[in-house]
Amino acid sequence: MSSPETHHLRVLIANERRDRLELVVPMVASLGHAVVAREVEVDDVGAVTARERPDVALVGLGASSEHALVLIERIVKEAACPVIALLHAPDPGFIREASKRGIFAYITDGDPVELQNNLDIVLHRFAEYHDLEGAFGRRATIERAKGILMERHSVDDESAFAMLRDHARAANRKLVDIATAVVDGHPLLPGPAPAPAD
Image 1 (cartoon, rainbow, N blue to C red):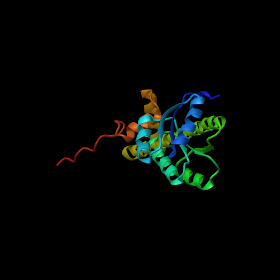
Image 2: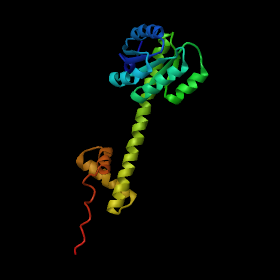
Image 3: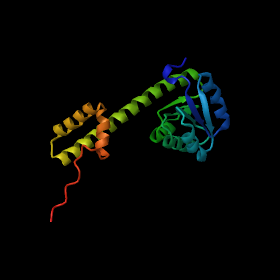
Image 4: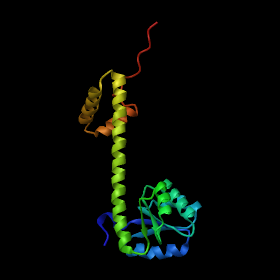
């Protein structure tokens, strides 16, 4: 039933109601995933998330929407994984607030097929998000390195890029690795100007 991307996920489940946690656990297990943590307490969820490093977190809306929102905030802060809100009934106000705090999706928690389909979608979108975030980061690093080389070598934009590209080819390394080295103080940069003679 699960795709290769979502086979054997490590799942954290959080809900202020322990009885709701116990309903979701067998559903997640029936899909072939491992529940690595079940958390009720807001004060503990951040540390558990950091320690367990789940692939995905499911946060249930219990009696208090504020409790669920704080659980979402703590997990998003600590995790490099998507968070899915589990609802018993539609709640547009909660979804609006949860989306501000970082959820990637929401579902009702009664249907294993819907859960698996959402896991597939969310993990695919989360991977795309990280790829895009990485591309922006690489681009920013290259631009910073070009700016440094332009200033230090008194060259234009194209010449600075050519320096990076040529050095990457000569060293058989990725352009972004060379750019990172320049930003971190690589030898492509000229040394300090000699002190004036007296």
